[in-house]
Image 1 (cartoon, rainbow, N blue to C red):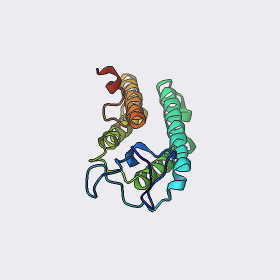
Image 2: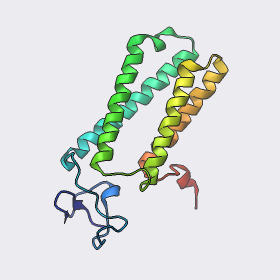
Image 3: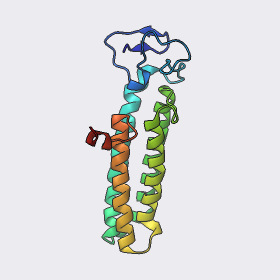
Image 4: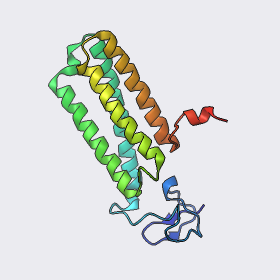
Length: 174
């Protein structure tokens, strides 16, 4: 595999590029693995955009875990307006950074199955998180939704890190 400068389609030895951009050097145009079209976001911004995305992922799950534990403990601070708005702000920025990476790398959820699975898991995580924090009325139901949301997050993170639809399950297979 050879890395390519996406703007000029020139091999650039020694410069690491995300796996989705690696293509065989002799790939004919239109073939699977063909170089993606030029992005509107310069590739030079990739490290900053990825760092921002990962930082926001950590902030988002940390805040969710703290809020979920607080709700289960009956603490009122978890649902006050400033905390909820902080969560919305973090998640909105996270979504924007993720969309930026998606555009920059010219990813497609159908072609790049790991991304499709990650997006489905994101919707499931949002629903479970909403159930855990406010929609379910029983403590047991909220605890189950909270644990399920955290497990869903773990699977989503493993899918993203491994770029594999099975995520960490892939490590268990021979």
